[in-house]
Length: 73
Image (cartoon, rainbow, N blue to C red; front, side, top):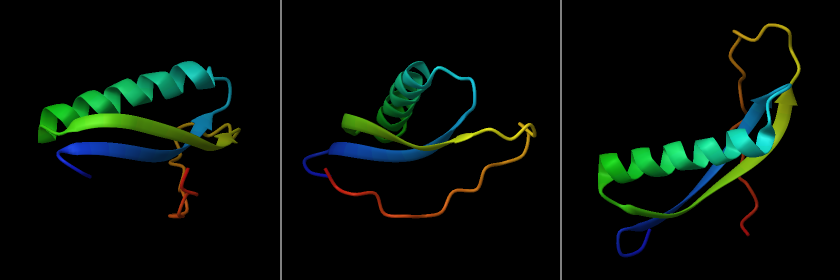
């Protein structure tokens, strides 16, 4: 964060069958709006990295993500 400007990196697992590009775009907008509304900071980028696809038939089961460091671009 510099001068009230932030970059956000997200790592997600998508549900099988969703339109990944549309879901990622929606996540970017929702996260940007929420962070700016709650903090007053300006969000420069919201980077969404898709780590995988959940193909489990148990869609209500929570997907646990490993807390891992993403490579810096």
